[in-house]
Image 1: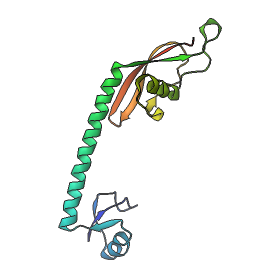
Image 2 (image 1 turned 120 degrees about the vertical axis):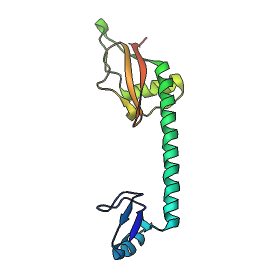
Image 3 (image 1 turned 180 degrees about the horizontal axis):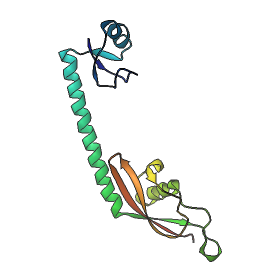
Image 4 (image 1 turned 90 degrees about the horizontal axis):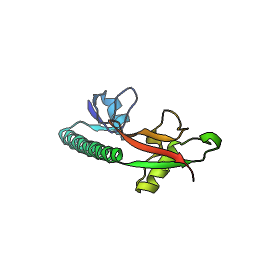
Length: 149
């Protein structure tokens, strides 16, 4: 019996897959527990519409991420940290501080988990920080680190 899976089922398939299952297993387990529906013409049409809608939404999200990446590359933010004698810094600039500074200076929230720092910034200067906006899009933001007044 052909079944359209509504959820991921271990050792059977992923959500949206059309799988062949034994009739007893399909009726008594998959359909009964709302893990799948019978693959008739109405359900196949619904699946096709759902997949096309998901593709459209994914395309819009990708476009929005690309637009935001362009916007990010044109902006720069300033983060100030304390310094001691001889220009040595106390602590470092972390992803949390960069996200907070971006929100204060540009008014837009960036998730600190999306900011990719290979290592914390411990010196003054200008740094390019990578921000993963989408699985296919990574933006770049200029961060100026200066001494706190």
